[in-house]
Image (cartoon, rainbow, N blue to C red; front, top):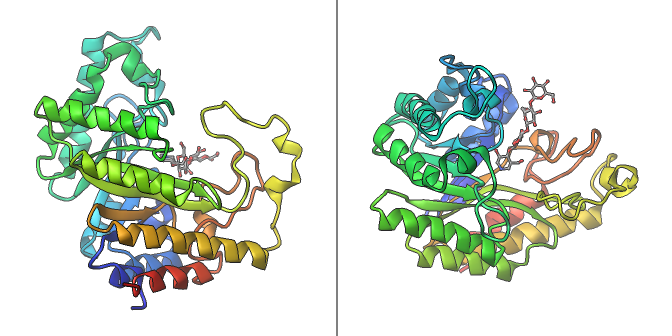
Length: 349
Ligand code: G3I
């Protein structure tokens, strides 16, 4: 096979997250890759609350309409991301006109209106929703957020209930990062069990794949794939990218290296990826896809968080000029050695 979607057609969907330009048809070279290689798409930013519902009563559906149309026209499994998250959600959602926190009842009403309007609009068109994103701390406890603080734990079940009412045919997921950590993955499984016990529909857990060249280990990823499947829901690897640079933070703030701004490692390779690192990336993608294939009975979808190295959120983060090489396609829209290596994993027994 020449394409990712053909190579893994008996295993799982393979997809990519699209940015605004790609969804709007303003990035023809990327669009070509998207249509050729993938059979599922995710929206990188355009369906987040601040994008689609920036002000009370104001919805901005144009980018999302184009995104959904692109997916439908190409017979893709169209993913929605995301309905309830602490990030990229405007502060007005949680406040009254005086800037005071709203009551639980008001916030639940706003949540329901948002989910009804957004998930309802794409009912029958968006095939799966990340209903709740990143509600957990790394230790598996619930993250302090305005959702939790104002509504309480019930915000989780309400989100899934509203999503199911608005889009009865859509699959519904819980999505989070660092899911290779056993405590965090078990936290996600507790969320799912709680929903199941209450008879609320939940179809899968998304393990975001923002991983490095060395960590997490294949064994750690495997243990979480197995544990999630044991809980009786689909496993998806969402948001896959392999950062070739050192991770500047664990995104919980605990191990941020205060000197990183002056550390040349974070801005290395701006003249190109050295061969030795290219080889490591190729091997890492090979090992990861060998693992995914081994568990293709449990995994329903693999989604890359971007198309080419140029699109990735890992550039310019957390400092301007940071240049990373996490994807399978380079900045000239050419497949990297890792692309061929991934395709080859499909031919193995
Ligand atoms: O649209 C504005 C633009 O008008 C402005 O000039 C520019 C200046 O910074 O910012 C633009 O917004 C940026 C937005 O992406 C769109 O490009 C934001 O600053 C930037 O913070 C935002 O980053 C996104 C990030 O989520 C925010 O949380 C990344 O693109 C997106 O890839 C990333 O995706 C998340 C997943 O949704 C959840 N899991 C983690 C993952 C990576 O952080």
